[in-house]
Image (cartoon, rainbow, N blue to C red; front, side, top):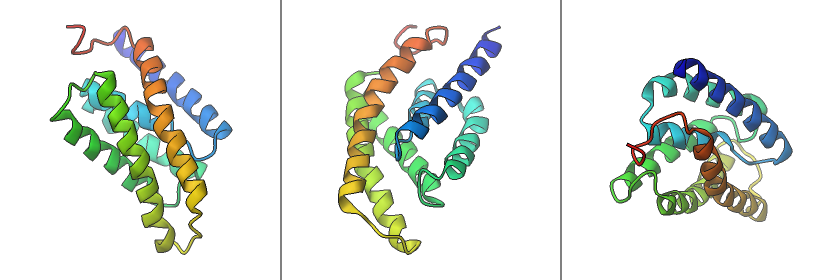
Length: 156
């Protein structure tokens, strides 16, 4: 039963993420799902969810083509580096991670724009980076509260 509940939770998450991303251009809601997968060390589900996240992001066009892969690699790398210093379920860790991810969002956009001969609007990218950085801790707190059926290290 917990497997079915987990699948239903992820499908609801994906539906909500697509809806929120349609309403807020430039926001990557699925990043929070990736952070939750990394926290739970749920590599089995990450095996099928991460390619789905990438396909959805590429299809929705929220980032420049190919930038989604670089973005998710940055998310995973920053999470793993931060996990060495902090407890992964700690809100302070998520807050600091989101600040770093806001900077990474800007960096990935800056890197990918000239590669694809796209204009780079500094103010627009800064605004999107700030929205991403503010969104992550709030969404993480809400989503972790809804995953009460899944055991976390802090609950064990």
